[in-house]
Structure formats: structure tokens, C-alpha cells
Length: 372
Image (tube, one colour):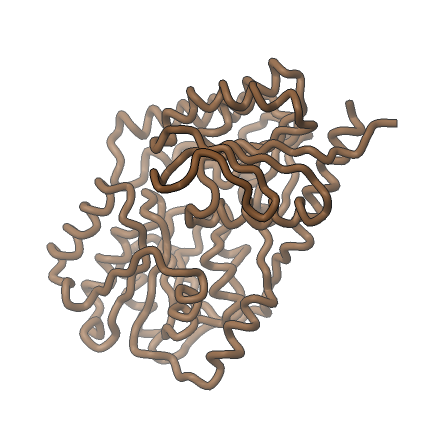
């Protein structure tokens, strides 16, 4: 009888304290696994030079490589992964840049390997803003290459993502849907402290500076909204990538919105959620979403959502919302007026619990080991 896997090596582009939906997933998962008695090690980039090269956080052993650029990680990540892989039962990685070094090391070491796909864009690469045709072509080819690799198990974080991967007609028998998990008691605690407060006169956008996040749609639609002087737009975004941040600042200035748009960076989780909770509504204008933690968290808190309806958003958004079913800025501008009048649709809160996600992952690890 095969042993139960108790040693998991994670190979990730970014990890805590880096802020993002993917990082939230793996931070929560690693903590839960350690609590259950697993030996967990993470190999990742050193995105902040003030971070130590090696440390143990809550029982999680973290090895940071001396690379800030995640693209270099695709090459340099192989050597450390190969070195440490011999002491682990399973390697777990994610799209995009960490996938290749993790896969090569796993195959050479003859270890089982799991990949979590957060999004599969396919030809959407050629329709997105903020990216050159050359870069879109490169990333499209790279994504197709990763999709052709024979991972032992493929995790899709939503039914939409699973469907997209299935449409590529590769490895269908290896694709499993495991939703990202949220800590709902934490959101209930945030809500209970703010229940007595009335929504403040602002709308909010929260997200990384990704080319699929629809920031151009956000700025254009807000610029054309007659109420933009009464209802401020708060944008909670990082300052990296620096080139993208400069483009966003430039667009805000060119739109004449420097006084109407307030920028926030590097907020604590509690401060961020409190800001979302107090907003009249949150805007999610994405061209695509593989899951969208922001949507799931806003739904949990009860903040109304105005969204594009693209990708997995229809699947994840619940509570109060307006589905524009579009990436046209005009449709968003109209939706903002409806939101001010509280003309939202309602769907019972759909929960994606952290415990269910962890249970699904541990069952998967056991299944892989028993198949050896």
C-alpha cells in the first residue's frame, strides 16, 4: 500500500507577503497543510530585496531565489526545484512562469506534479490592451506550450477555466475543478464591525495591474459618467509593474480625472476590505477572469458589484450585482447610474470555503500517491 503524501514542494512565481489572488490561495493552502501535519516548502522569487533568502513562516519553509523578474524564474527556478525535489512526494506549481522549471525538475526526478491553472486565455491574448502584437504572440505560444506538457493532474479554479482547458482537447481526463477557498468567518467579522455604517460616496476598483483587468474600460467609463464629481473613484492598485503603473497614471491625467480618482497602494487586508465594505459599489471590468478573488470577497462582504460578466465572473459573483455582459465602457457608464439607484439583481451568496478547497487538494495528493 502506498504511503500518504506528507511532503509537498510548491514552486510559485510569487508567495507571501506578495499580495494577489493567487498568492492568497497558496498562502492559505500551505498554512492549512502545515496545520494538518504536512511538510511544506515553497520555492519562489524574491520580489522585495528586503525579504530574507530563506525563512520559516508559520511552519512553511520558504526559499527565495535572487531574481525579482518572474521571467528569469522560468530558467533559474529549475536548479533549486531539482535540488529540493528529491526530498518531497509531490511538486505543486501554477501558471505561468513557474510551470516549466517545476515540470522539468519533476520529470527528471520522477516525481508527481500538479499544476493549478488560474486562467487559460488562448486567443484572447490578441484582443487585450497594453500589450504589443509581438508580446501577445510570444505569450500565446508559451501558454500553448505549457498546455501541451503532460502534468499528472491539472486543477482548474472554476468551471469556466475547466471548460476552456477542455476546449483545447488536451489531457481532459486529468482536469479537476477545485475552487479557490475563502475564510468566510473573517469576512463576517469585518461586516459585523461596519454594519452600522452607511455606504460612503465612492465606488472602488481593486486589482493588480494586469492587461486583462479592464483598467482602460474603467477609466473611460468613469470619465463619461455625469456623476463622477459626486461619486469619487478609489483605485487600490500596486505600483508594479512600473511601466504599467505609469500608463495608468497617464491615462487618468489625460482623462482629466486627477481630482476625481484617488489611488491607494499596499493596504493591509483589513484596511482593504473595510474600504470595499464602505463603498457604494465595486467595479470589475475584466476582459476575463479565471476565478476572481475580488468578486468572491465583495460578494461575501455584501458590497454590490458592477461587472463585465466575462470569464468566471457569472459563476463567482453573487449577492447584489449588475452584470453588464460587456466590455464596452458605455455599458458600464449606464450601469453606474443603475447602481446609484440601487437597481441591483440578487443571487443568494455562493460560498467557496477554504476548508472544502484544502480537503479537495489533500484528496488529490493522496490519489496521486496511491497511483504510483
